[in-house]
Length: 142
Picture 1: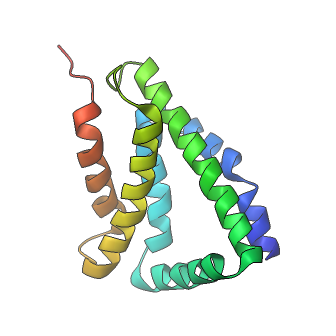
Picture 2 (picture 1 turned 30 degrees about the horizontal axis):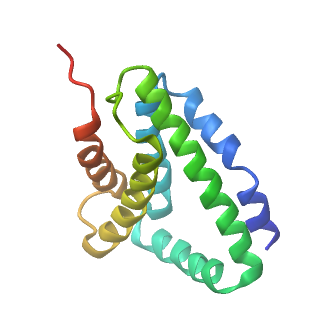
Picture 3 (picture 1 turned 120 degrees about the horizontal axis):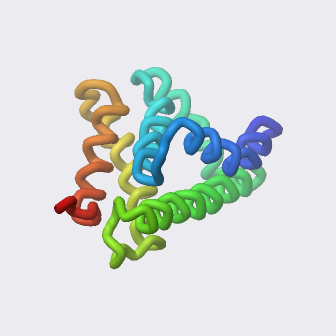
């Protein structure tokens, strides 16, 4: 429980670290997907993390930390989408709040889908799905 609490309090720092290594909001969104893919580095790692998720979903003391992290992650994802819009990587008409929620859903769902198929590395599988979602929002270069 203590570890869960510590993890949930480090969301902003996690995203700050992701930003350090990437020049743009779009690159950082992709790095986020790669970071989450570490939870599925291999089938055994995924199974272990999935077992922890089951506890997070069913135990109220753990769930409050999961919810805190989830809410803060969505806020950070929205900030990255807004950065990508501002830097003209994404179309100005992009609904940042909705796209952040979609990215959250796609990254999590893609990891689960990878667990079923286990075709190649999870990071590659998940990045492919993220890029498919981002494609209609990408600003076209002249």
